[in-house]
Image (cartoon, rainbow, N blue to C red; front, side, top):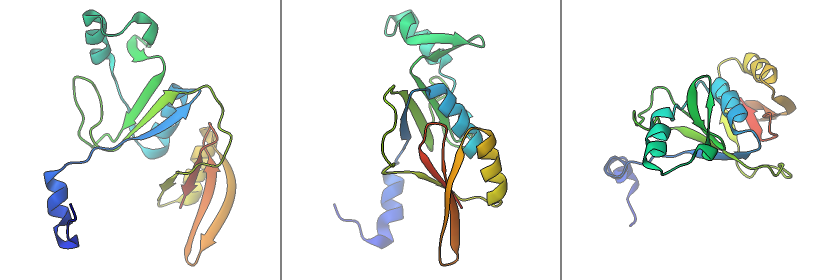
Length: 161
């Protein structure tokens, strides 16, 4: 149903929208760690949920692994906004969230979607991301706006402005 512009904020309150951005990658845990550092998110801890699912027989030991004494999914990792809502039992973010899922096929084309990181000190962030494994691709500008397009460790584009 069409909602007039003046009423959109009221309609949004009535229907809460939770979102996540999903990345396919050959290294879900590595890319999750990269983006957690890049955007200031925390890696989700799913160990309580996994333990419960194992006890109920709803998942298997083959689907999980123990790292640093903590259970995690083998083929999935996620990060969330540390200040956003989350489910304490599952560890899953209910606001801004990024999911990284196993996909062994390498990236072969330009992204159709990418993240823009709006930061106070672009050069410092570019240097930080480079140390974390990203690489600068090019710089661009339109009018007074300028940015650096980078590739994350998996080759996905990120713009830093």
